[in-house]
Length: 100
Image (tube, rainbow, N blue to C red):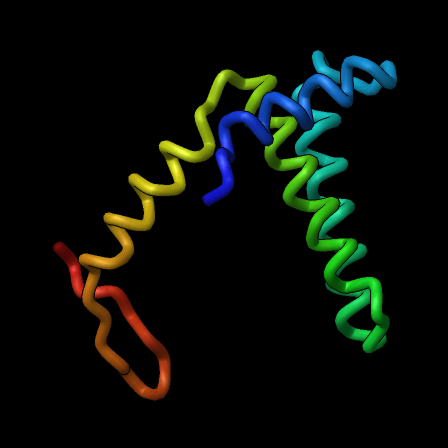
C-alpha cells in the first residue's frame, strides 16, 4: 500500500523546493478548484490527459492538507468508515441519505 502521509509530505516539500505558495490558503483552494475544472474539461473533450489532470487535483489537495496540518490519510479512512455505514433510499429517482 501507499503511505499517503509520506506522499502528502513529499508534495509539500516539492512546493517548498520550487518556491510555490505554502501560506495563502484561499489561493490554494482556488488553484485546487482550477485543477478540478481542468480535469472536467479534459474529460468533457475526451482528452487523454484526464488522468494527469486528476493527479494534479490530488497533488493540490494533498499540499493543501499538509499546509493546514490535516492528515488526509486518517481523514480519508475515517470518512470512508462513515460513508460505508450510511444507508440511502431512492425517492423519485434521486438517492437520499437516510438520517442516522
